[in-house]
Length: 112
Length: 461
Image 1 (tube, rainbow over the protein chains, first blue to last red):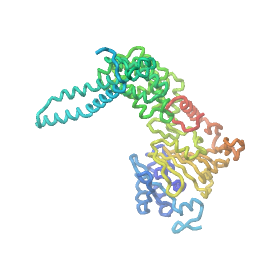
Image 2: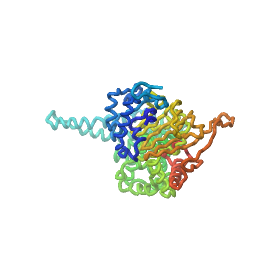
Image 3: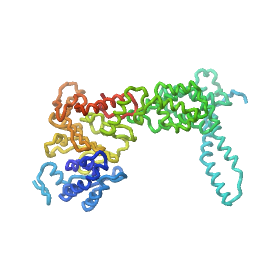
Image 4: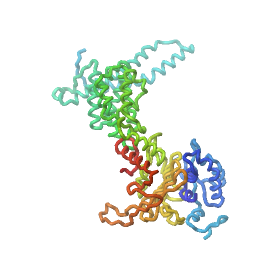
């Protein structure tokens, strides 16, 4: 999961890699479990969410943490048979530090 | 009017263009005018007038335009014929004015043969327009169409192959423009078979064409079977009997001994490997993930199918992503200070790599500049399967640049056996359960090299 965060994967990519199943409906039952993990990451300040603009060349749109919780909790943002807007994960400084093996304070700022 | 007349080709061309414009204007507006006026009159508004002359003019205009274009074509050909050079006086060409269709059809047949030989797409499209115009004529266009197809059948049969040679690639065998050309040529052919006027030699040239892929593609982009009429069903059946469609663009001879292997290959490729198909049923796959090992990102970008959108920048990291629904191709710069978690591919994540996600599979492949490429203990490819299992491939690239001529290898080149025995050529596991996979892969390779319409990203045998 942390590697997917560092790679700035979309939620559907996390589902694709972290949930078993030959096809999307087979993976869907695992979404609630993944929601829990990503919410934990968010609560620990390890990740943020963003999405790409619909217009080519426009800047990336950061999603505020307050809105991020709602987005993460909606299974349709992980996968939907119809059109849906991919939501990407990104590491915070603390998340990146964790990936690099540094000690971090999950309740406060990054430690050493 | 005498049969042969002198004409000025340029002015005749202008006249033909004017009649074509009139035809198009009438076709676009007469139905609207007639319907609008009739709705007024039916509603009690105004007094009706006779619109029959307008309808007749519309009905006649395709024939007039096509006939004048035929004369213009003949005049141009006359001027282009070096045999007439001594006869050219005052810019006049001498043509048969009445019933020029048969001569024009013969001219088109000759020009189609020349166009296919030289790859002159513009000429092929000009003839397509002639066919289109004569189709618009209805029954009046039959003499031209019959004469054309009875003479040009071998070239018509070879048309798709010619278009492939001109524009096609394994990735896109026939462009949408090519398909439109084929559709018109096939519609003309269907009109002739429906009319029962296709000669036996012409029919034989179509059913016994040297390249039945080309013939099958002609039929594929043509009208429904009923458009060919009873007289064309034999032709359709013959093409159908002579060929077997493996995938949308891979059509092979029905007697091909490899058909079972080819079918199995496509089934395998579509289900077991990365398929980046732009058309449902097409097979686009990385025949061997090694084909991207050490590749430059700008080269990989050229391989990404059109339906993927991108490149899109990452927010925090360096790299890019292209994505289609449920599929993504990424380039990650990696993190040189990333923690070593002791995984076989940990080193790969410290440098640039590609990540390809699709259909339950995730491939991570070391890109140019990856430190893993020169470390025999580091996995350079990791594959996550839909069941969550991971497979690692340890394949190093020689860091010697063959272009520099020094012959030195700057890094080790070793393969490491792990979780089975790897073939030195394919890096495919060779346990019995994988033997079929290897066979399918080889069959797919052969098809890619032999037939049109297979997208093969590297890894050719």
